[in-house]
Image (cartoon, one colour):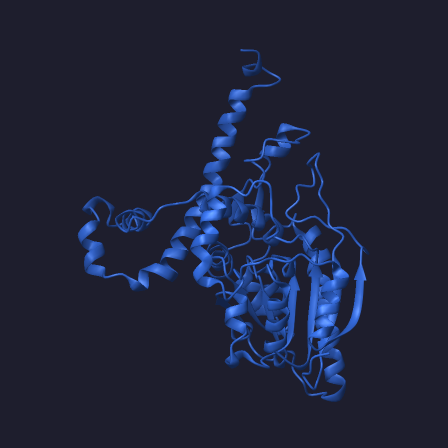
Length: 379
């Protein structure tokens, strides 16, 4: 009874949290619809769909898609739920005004490096257009860095293996109608380390810009933005280590990405394959090795690894190794790169961090650029 009364009003708090979760669900529903239309609908027989949908739902897009998923016996796993929750927080980082603090620290130096590289090339070729510089962004997430690089005038291809993030980025990049179209509560599901309950209950609006409008008005290149930006689905190592991608890109940008590798050598070899001789690799991020053993390595994660054994040629390559930053740079040089710039600890940044939380986790990321040798030889 005590906690149900002011100043606690815990039941009222629960009710507000329930409403906020419903608000997050509106965005999740938009992602579900866009994902269904993009990935599943083209494969379905329209007559079969019509035969399983009750007449009362024929005009309800969400119900139609849900019924199809039920008939296909699609199950939502705990991992799916965690990824959906993570996507909400990722929207905060990539597509909100509040997330600009992290983006300016992590994205701006990368774009600045690309602009410097283009300026150097333009000295030799004054007529060069920015669109001639092809950039690859592995681990593209929700697409903000891809968008920002395109807006800066370069041609850019994002790569992402997570369908959850691909669908989420598609909603923002291709389906939003205006700035602030969605209101989400990124911290509603976390009940720890709040100074005030209002911190937990606060909402933010996304996107902070309207992508289509911004790209339509981008004037850094003579080539329209929609012709300079694309997304590729698949395992980075498997896709870009193929011969068809050899010597394709002028630059590769990896932001908070290389520590997702169980074997960093595979990543380096893949970057080396897809970069042109003389091409630039721009990296920024920590080394929180994602595949290192954890105490909470539960049965579900073990089961997931078993299911992924068929993909062991790529990111899921078995046998992880965790290297220091010095060792990573030594490997990069061994595989035919020259380190042109290196700094570490020059700034601190969070990753999807709640700035009002009592718990603040910050990284001191490494930042370096490496150039692929013209002769493409190993050291």
